[in-house]
Length: 91
Image 1: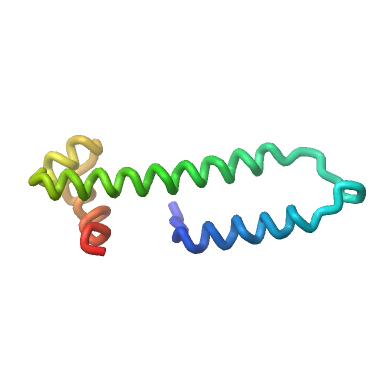
Image 2: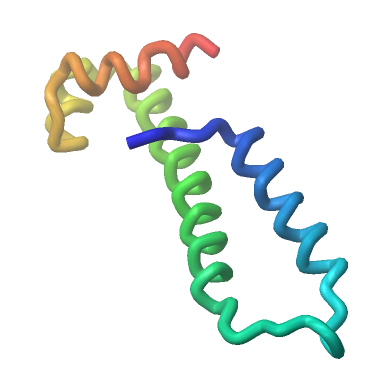
């Protein structure tokens, strides 16, 4: 799975907004865009949820939770949890 940075996602959203703003409703042929709006909404939800998850892990670590405990809550291995969140914790 290819992950994009928040900056890349925001740039893509800005490009989409500029394109949408420049559409002339009288001349534009738009058959169906709710699927694209759904994609944008889902991407926003993923970013928000990822930030919430990262913050929750940081709080758990600050309260003395081990990587084993956090991994169990995530349903993953200790190594995977640590690799995913340890660097973000120091940032």
